Amino acid sequence: MLRFIKHNLTTIDGVEIFPMLSLLIFVLFFALVLVRVIRMSKSQVAELSDIPFEDEATEDVKLASNTSTND
Image (cartoon, rainbow, N blue to C red; front, side, top):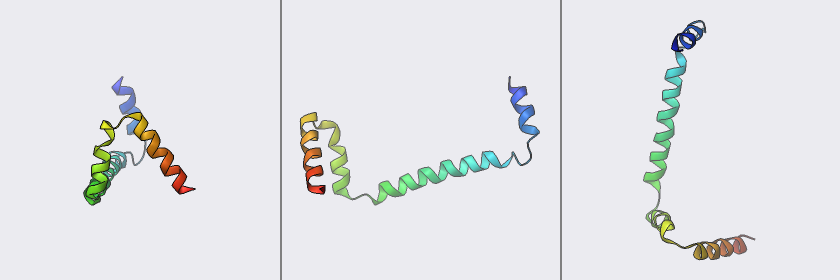
């Protein structure tokens, strides 16, 4: 099966750029995620780390209070 794919790829001009382009996109994405995580404030990290321990009723109250203050 690989020979069918390999044959089709060898007939495409400029196909050698695709692996480098995909690696560049991959590295840039994770670099941006890393920068965002490093720049997060400690209060935001604490708020996000408490999410798994909250029950659904608390989340509903927070959502309701956030929507009423945003109106």
